Figure 1 (tube, rainbow, N blue to C red):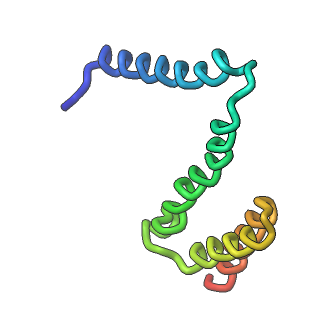
Figure 2: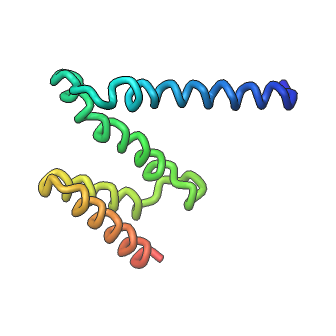
Length: 109
């Protein structure tokens, strides 16, 4: 089904309003208030929940290899996980993953 240009613009407008409403609900409405402890406790886990969802497709189905799982990317993900688990530091985990990826790509050609 092909959309007309007015339907496309209406969709863009509605998505923009929805995005604004979601952000405004946190920033505009409750931005200057103290949040309850139970909300803060749940918000602590947001990066832990989002980051694997962003990284997993890049590791398992990388565009660089036309969607084929690559040993270099798997090794880099495993190294980043191990370093992150023991160091509890995102910076060291990311550095280990990046370094392992570059090393494995160099070694494997």
